[in-house]
Amino acid sequence: MAAVRKAAPGAGSEMGPEYKRAGHVLLHAPSPSKLFGRVPIRHVVLMQMRFDGCLGFPGGFIDAKDGSLEEGLNRELAEELGPGASACYVTENDFISSWVMESPRKIVGHFYAKRLSLGDLEQLEGGAVHAKDHGLEVMGLVRVPLYTLRDGFGGLPAFLCNNFIGSAKEQLLEALGCLGLMPQNKLEEAVRASQK
Image (cartoon, rainbow, N blue to C red; front, side, top):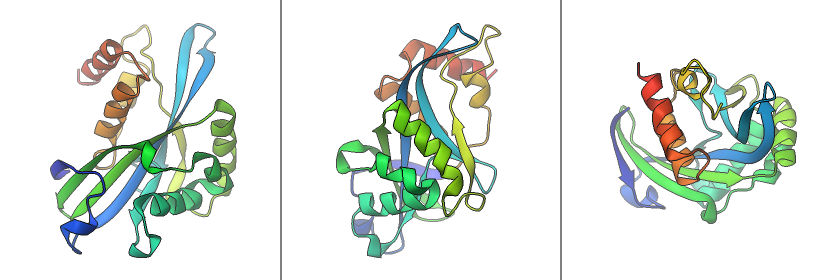
């Protein structure tokens, strides 16, 4: 993505009509599960496989008729996640950061994170196949592996080698750190392992 910079919360409408506004959300829940009975999962973090083959977060472009950023984002979530989206209603309190892209299109994006109960998250996953956009804009939800396997590459390092849309990879790493979903040293190790 070219010419990305951080923007102030709520930026977009005051930047001029040539900028489109977008909103996306990282959904997460604590989990007591263990992979193979020994690798702690700790947290479930959702991303989605998009129509273009890239990984991203639920959300999308906010229309002027949506009113607030959060109203537009919640409309997008209902379209992409179906009836379970009501459990992840996003408010201003869930805001994490904003960014600006100048080319190839002028976009101001706003990123949120919402903590759910594991039960609500699992219900959302199960119902997402009935969403309006399932199989069209969204190919399916994906859980992010928040661990590194003994080989030093399996898990998060391998996941980070996928193709991500726009700044989704940077947003994922930022959120994992600022929300404390992974210890910072383990997160840094996973990033280094993914670059080898």
